[in-house]
Amino acid sequence: MAELDLGVDLGMACARLAVLDRRGVPVAPLRDTAVPDEDLGVVDDRVCRFVSAVLRAPADDRDGRAGVPRRSVVAVPHSWLGGDPSPAALLEGRLCGADDTDGRVVSQPVAAAAHLCRRDPRLVDVPLVLCDLGATALRIAVCRVTSTRVALLSHTEVTRSFDVDTALAEYAIRRGSRVAPARVDARLLRRTIAAARAGLVPEEEAELWAGRRELFGREPYVTAGAYTLTYDDAAAATEALTTAAGALAREVRATRAELTDGGPWRLALLGGGALFVPLRRAVLAGMGAETGGRVLDLDRDTVLRAAACGAALVAGGLLDPGDRYPHEVSLAARQVSGGVLRPVEVLLARPGELHAGGRSLPGRGVPAPVHFDGRDVELVVRDRGGVSHRVRRPVPEELKGGTFAVALRQLATGECVLVCRSGDRPRREWDLGVLPVSGTGG
Image 1 (cartoon, helix red, strand yellow):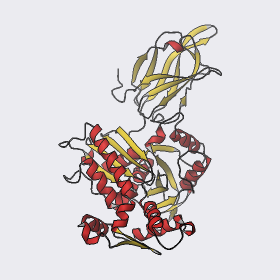
Image 2: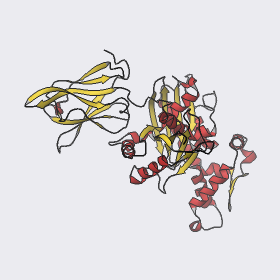
Image 3: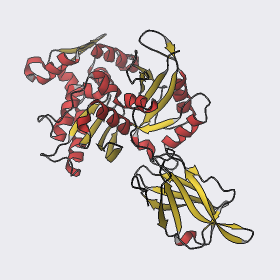
Image 4: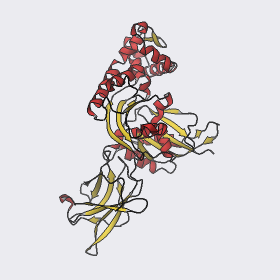
């Protein structure tokens, strides 16, 4: 049986899959899996069952030999890393509880950026803007990839439909035909339009959209059953989408100091919407990148599956996006034992367990809660070579004199908090700041 690695880009309308062999080479077929009837906006039992089924599905390599991916990673929207508990942590916890699936979760822009930089090492140490034009949201992330990690500098999104095929179907029904709207199956019409658009060669479509408008404005763009949509119709149907996309691009460009006219930043347009030229042109205009060679020249599979391929490379151990904290973290504190305060060290995270937006990691290694008597405590950070670095933290006033069970959690911003629980009282969170990433010696 072939050993394959699976990356899943969990979108709100479909899950895009990439299956790689042990060398990191894509194997056929790259495919999509439609989500359940409702969008995957909330992590619940339905979503967890869907993702588990996707991870368990067998895959075939190019020679038709069946294989089950040996490891898998799921790329989720970056917004899922926020909240308490975060949707990403809920999903990861459920998947880790399954016997036959690997539950690691990674942020979509982190996976996509890591994959793009592996393809083109010239992108390392250059600000990289990822515009993900998905079916239910436009997300713009600004990243900087170093030799060891992907730093997410900013992430902005507009949650609304950017589904071109749905917009065309709704426009066709509104402007449409002699068929009464009540009798039109909007979902069937959308699928028919999507199939018709898929038959267009992307290069030919781009040439038509980029040409002189009057030469093709009223010419047929797609024909779906009783409906014929011209290029003018398509432009009118998607005007709200292109306006919103351009506005968000201008906002991001105006608020990020890295994105100057003379700066070295590059731009990648990803997601199904990036294949629709008017939407693509709106983003380029908003970013001021219509000319100048900033836009990465990506093939169709990369546009659609950069995050899925990045997740598959992470699964196979061929790529480390640096989204996991690489060191062991312990808490040097005190514990009441036999009526006496004694020093203890609580293991909070092993190397690679802690990551942004992940679940809380409960303290291990000591059987009883720790006591904060008012003296400073120390975070002990040990690298894989055993070299330790001690970070002293003063105990907050509201925790002094209390006895707590502790857990460590990393926020989507990269900062860490110590979650403190005592009996039935509301839990408290102690802001620990950003833990040292390197230079742990001393």
